[in-house]
Length: 60
Image 1 (cartoon, rainbow, N blue to C red):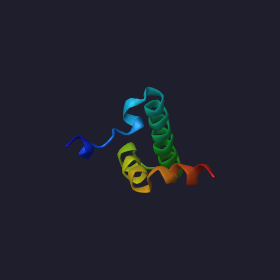
Image 2 (cartoon, one colour):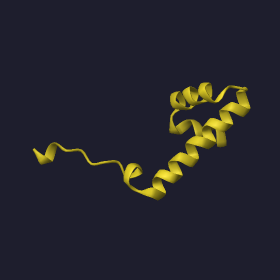
Image 3 (cartoon, helix red, strand yellow):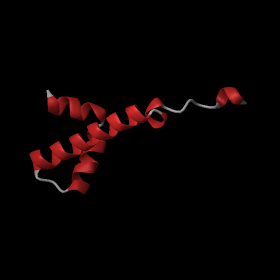
Image 4 (cartoon, one colour):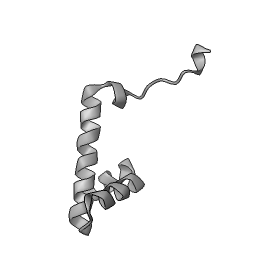
């Protein structure tokens, strides 16, 4: 039974990883808001849709 338990992702247990993820997510949302003139709620949806690759593409 124990072998069926999935490992918790490091981003949820490592404080530095969580802070880094949050910072990147906030930056992604703010960039979308500024580039497209969207509200924060709209930008959150867009960032969720783009995923983590979206920030990388916007920074390129």
